[in-house]
Length: 464
Image 1 (tube, one colour):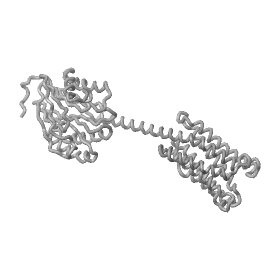
Image 2: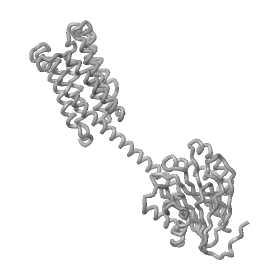
Image 3: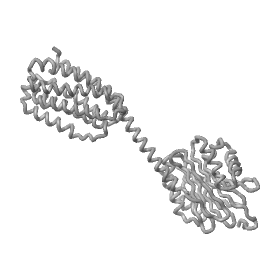
């Protein structure tokens, strides 16, 4: 005969070892619901095994009912873990209720003298709970896990063993030779121990697979949220070009990811046009949120305001937010007077606005200000130039520089590409953004172009 006490001690020690391995390796790395419930089951099985060691002593009166209740709670925890694999709820009362029931029944069945107090209920609950666990695993998607079948076979065999044990218990009693030989404590402990080891290794694999599935689902949701955010952001960009007689206007933004930290905007004014191109430090969702804040502040300012006045209003509105997130924004904000062609601009550390003259010369719009958010609010300095007939005003984000190797001549080379295209604002923009579409570049690419039509120069007015 096998020594039941030695087997129970071995069972407790091995269960403790499995718990430590599972808790500090699998659960610590995955934090999955499944691994939590399996850790709980291992602790409860171990505690139940040690409680049964009090059988045959004066402590049997409480040790036996306690062992029954704790082991049943362990089986219920296995069921909860299996339920979590299919995303089903795992309420605590499904663990507490069967445990409390079998403990109560055992406490009223002479536990001081009967080491099988509450035995039929204990065996029935063990068989039912382990069978329910097997059912949950059977109902899993067949493609979910590589360890699905080993789990089904191991847990199914254990559930069947307890159900047969329950039947034999009722048929011939726990003192019969048949029950003692094949279904007594030593045999059950050994069989449970072997299956527990097999199942634990399978559970570790399954827990990792469950976590991978959860992370994949979260990643899919995040990707969808980014795509949705990118769609909203694109719809906030100008959807039509302004009707400005004598001028051709175009612009586009190609994000490097789902969302962009760049934006451009324009608004028609009674005298002409207000245009902004901004580039927020960084990329991704954070930059996109700041870009939306700056855009909204610019939209809230009256378009007819002088650019320096507009920037002062926007600066005060967003300064606190930029300081809170330690971010800054470079931008070029300008106002075009359509009749004279005069361009009044505020360049906040951007430096990527250039006028390509009809005679082939270039004039870079001077950057006289720091980026917004670098040192709090500032006094905004404006510069003035004029767009003559046939001239092209090109404004880019710094992502355009990457298209031309990001060297000192990059802006000039971008202007060469724009002026070599068909003589329209749309042609200039497309000639540059086509390069972004052809490669894999790390930054957002935004371009705005304003071309003045070829008309008699005598219709223009001098700068005042």
